[in-house]
Length: 104
Image 1 (spheres, helix red, strand yellow):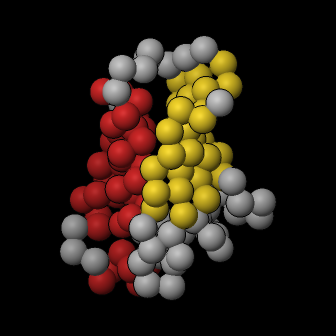
Image 2: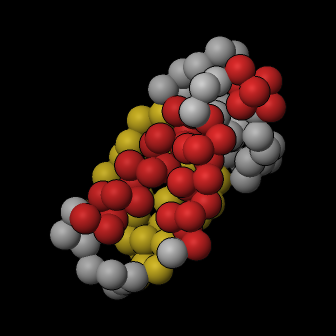
Image 3: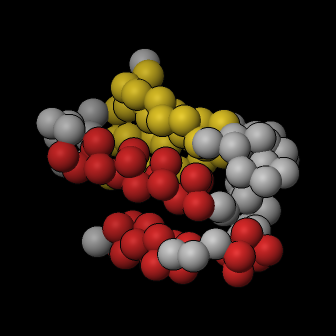
C-alpha cells in the first residue's frame, strides 16, 4: 500500500513527476520515482527525495531499509542534468545533501 507520494516539480524541459513510498515488507520502504522521460537528477528531484527521506526518518515510521527503483520502464535515471546543475545556484550542495543522507 502507498504510504505517501511527494511531487517532483517541473523545471525546464522536465515535466515533473512524483516519488511514491510503499512498504512491501515490515521495515522495508520502497521509493519509486517517476519523472518522465528519463528521471534526470534536477533540483526538484533532489528536493523531493530529501522530503521522502525526511518523512521516513522523522515522520513516525519504524526504522528500516530504504530501497529505490524507477517507475519508468526504460530508465532508473539517465543521470545528472548537467546544464541545469551548472546554471542553478545551490544545486551541488543539495546533491551532496542527498548523497550524505543515503550514506548515513
